Length: 200
Image 1 (tube, rainbow, N blue to C red):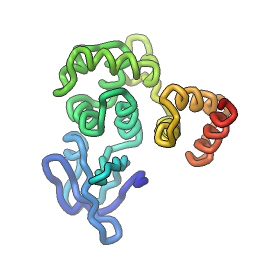
Image 2: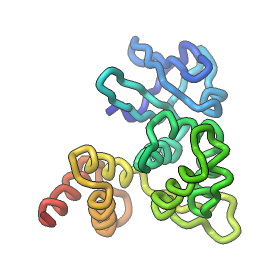
Image 3: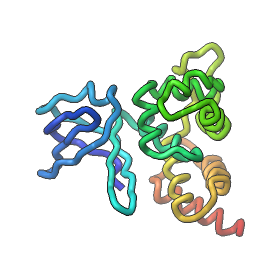
Image 4: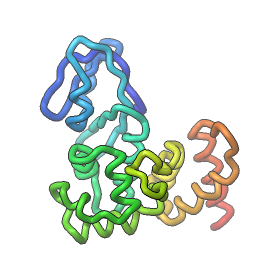
């Protein structure tokens, strides 16, 4: 998995940028807000998420890890693929999306093309607990956001064949054992697999 890219910006398009890393130009799909901060010729560092399909490899780029984690979290909801997740972040800031999910704000979510009322309600139902509760009276700044490793381990477990519910339970169990700086993701993933293996 390509977790990040750092290099010279070779070009910026309407929906992507080309970042040269070690002589290779990576085409990275980005939301408008991320593209606005990139200039050809400048050095750039982007958190990235690689989406693998049978006929394509698509790299999505983000200004920081929390935005990437939210992009990946959105895709754990039923009916949400990378393009729709990217559309959400193209319309709203990550903070606004977390606030909408945590507060059950259907109106904000339905402003995204492709998300109707039922789709917004499903997103809220499936993701509200995962983004955490906002501090009372906050506008998103006090949001409790899942640690990046939790989303990565969850995705890894689902990719290995466990259900979303099983993955969530395992991640929660692993989180209880983490005190301070978490170990590397592969170590946490192996721990979660061992827990799930015992449960079978």
